[in-house]
Image (cartoon, rainbow, N blue to C red; front, side, top):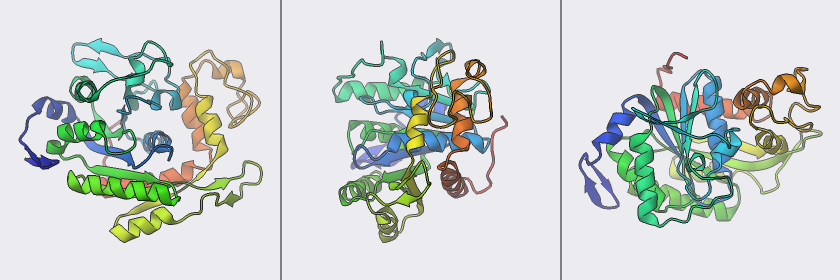
Length: 318
């Protein structure tokens, strides 16, 4: 039994529990405002968890602005219907990373979603009841900014099944910190534990000299976490190469680009562009990301998260 916005919920959605039964941990990624890099944080958390040998699912419920398919090189993929339900899109051949997004259901990448609250609610319910994830260690739910219909809907369906909690993403600016405080209040109201705070865009890493400059100041997210007694998971600087890395995540057979991470048409280890075309986009993305300046930062963040929600550090066999 749980309370959502003052309303008591009594196991009203057993079909959600049936789907979640094979998932060990559910974590929501929240932000108080748009533009703080919440989806990029979600993508990097997913890649870092996969690198730690976890099976991971990413559910993108930002229905009006889905970013996950593009960031993970899955933009042209489509989902399929099976007897067990919708089959998510798998990013790699070993099926360590599964993704579901409204982006996979749209006619093309430029199609807009112009829906009122009830239709959004119905789609989120369908995502939670009809997607066959299989065995997962972690399901990351990428949410839209703010505290809107999507947040209330997903919490209505998840609350009775006790999700592990939320990661709050902010930037150092005062306006972002003000909005993330509202997100923290929302979490308290719906009884969603806050696992920690990530301060994104905390400085700028020069691609030439690797020096970090505090464009938007730094430390605001850590101070806010301390104020509310929350765990601070880490500072994440802006790295221009991350943008290039996500932009170059493409379908097999397309050019991988000649600038940014890897450079000169290679993947950083001398492989030719023709050889790269034969590999899965996510495999290339994960390999390049592992060599990036942000990878060690997110490795530390993931270790803090996993030790918090799963102290025994159990993983599902890959």
